[in-house]
Length: 222
Image 1 (tube, rainbow, N blue to C red):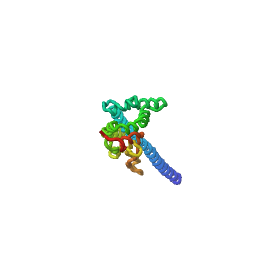
Image 2: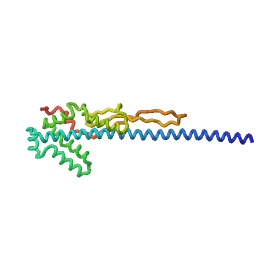
Image 3: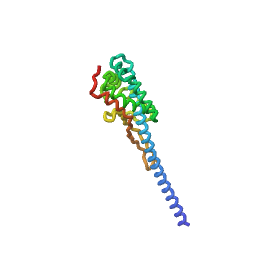
Image 4: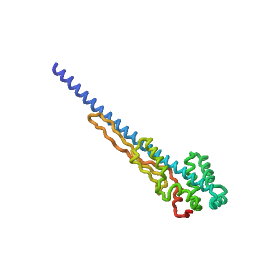
């Protein structure tokens, strides 16, 4: 009888040991899955921030083009006479072509601007001037509205504003965002302790190639 009782005690011990191992494996598995979820969340945050900031740059592009088009300056008048249409109308015409070929509206506008604007920016210093008024005299300057928009999106996605870096690449002519999202591990409060880790990610906006012509040396500001 004593032997049987001892066997029962050993079985209970092994069962508890097995349950403990299973619990540890479960916690580790959940943490691994959570790392991937947080990483994807961090990636989504910076991608949305880059797109949101780029949307502001496109708004400023439209403002600069409209200001040039509505100007009574001789350069604006000459451009309409030579091309038969304003710069804005040329962009809209090209944009429609891209949309007819399946591009979405934002992508079609960027492609059209990249195609139309470089030549016009080189020919008409006034147009370049309208851009530098809104974007700054250097490509490394980030307009305040872009910064605030990026930070708002970062906050909305619960990423870390203190780790957020905003840069406009002068190599690829696009907005680049770096930030982190904090991973908080799950703990079993016994074998695995809780810890925090900042997961970094980078997000990129589409290339605004026409901005290279804004900051080229050709053309003199009025």
